[in-house]
Amino acid sequence: MLVVSLAPAADGAKYASALGVVTSMSQARPLNVGLIGLGTVGSQIAERMLTWGPQLSRRAGVELCLQKVLVRDVTKRRTIDISPDLLTADPDAILDDPRVEVVMEVAGGDEPMRSYIERAIQAGKHVITANKVVMAKHGPELLDQAAEKNVDVYFEAAVGGGIPLISTFRTDLQANRIESVSAVINGTTNYVLGRMAAAGLSMADAVREAQDAGYAEADPTEDVGGYDATYKLAILASIAYEIKVRPDEIYREGIQGIEPVDFRYARELGYAIKLVAHTQRHTGRVEARVHPAMISLDHPLARVEGAENAVFVEGDLVGKVLLMGQGAGGRPTASAVVGDLIDLARSIRRGVQSRPSFSFDDRIGVVPIGEVKTRAYYRIRVDDRPGVLAAIGQVFAEEGVSISSFIQKDAWSHDMTAELVVTTHPSLDASLQKARERMERLEPVHAVSSFLRVF
Ligand SMILES: NC(=O)c1ccc[n+]([C@@H]2O[C@H](COP(=O)([O-])OP(=O)(O)OC[C@H]3O[C@@H](n4cnc5c(N)ncnc54)[C@H](OP(=O)(O)O)[C@@H]3O)[C@@H](O)[C@H]2O)c1
Image (cartoon, rainbow, N blue to C red):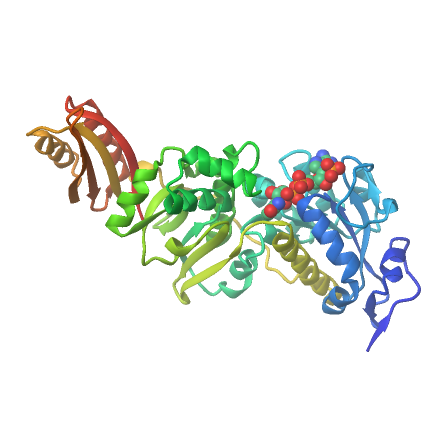
């Protein structure tokens, strides 16, 4: 039977009860939650908890009470209607308060948030975080600590915003040996590349447009340089294979070198260009890399548009699974965080940890990029004269790289140069790079203007 809670059992419950939170008869004690961060994501979490309390609590089976919210500046104007009494600038007000059982961290950055999460775990509090930097760099250690303390760390929102990824790996795909995960997981770069492809914009103009549309930060380096995608892939690979994959072990390349003409040539060859995060199981090792790539127009990732994200998983039992949706934004991300809270509340109510704790295998390493086998696309500016094709063909042959197509594209009479596009069959990445370096030293070659891996 469900009733409206009238008498708060703890101080913090006054807000919840004032909102008429519905709770189960069998569960008198509310679950007190401390929120760290009240920005884009935190505001949406707080608003959902404060305005949709009865529905959330009914689903959780326990009254959910927002006890305190940690911010930097308590005087700052907020985008939501929230009691000033709930705000604090003192982390101890959450981390040292024994009534707070769950800490939700949506402030971001490495420190002090890693320390706050660790303190919360050591104090026996459950943690829910959207922090990809902390989870990518320190996730395995924090999860180990949480297992020792018999508390949970949830981090659905750290990868793919509102797309249910972590829970899918943690529950629905558990019967599988995951073979590979390929993802378009950074909305900013996908928006930028999409605008370059559709409108022929330069990279600089497309980034400016993304900033104006609110899809890119004032400093877009984290996204454009592939760092954000690398953090997310480190988390996905660690969860998929139950090994410790660090962001600095992942090969990373940003989208900076791509020019509008590459989209034209890609389309003619039947490809889209995306920033791809890819990990694949090998015997005793895994491949993990983030770089721009040409993807066949038939592949589901080629159709991911704008700021959307998509993750394509292959498991030995399930086969292929595609997960797609809004990878960022306050509301989708709050959906993931509050979803985690409800799941956690249910497990606390049942007196069990609902999730299996991870055991991360330290022995499995990441394959160096040079040993990865991939196809490639080269765009080469050369003198438009006889013998050039033979010289280039010889370099590929000597490096053991088999050519798939060799096409002369645009030619310019004013300087007697031409553009060649070469695609290869799968070869060792080290050989592809060596061929690139050697071609750049050939006398009739002006530049290898573009090198992209073909996915
Ligand atoms: N935005 C998204 O679309 C999105 C998507 C997925 C994941 N995430 C992750 O969610 C987290 C939050 O992102 P966001 O976009 O909501 O950030 P944001 O808008 O910049 O908000 C950050 C909030 O944290 C507070 N804060 C920052 N440092 C603090 C500190 N040292 N002590 C106390 N409070 C502090 C800020 O307080 P003040 O308000 O007082 O300045 C602010 O309320 C990040 O980890 C991010 O990677 C975000």
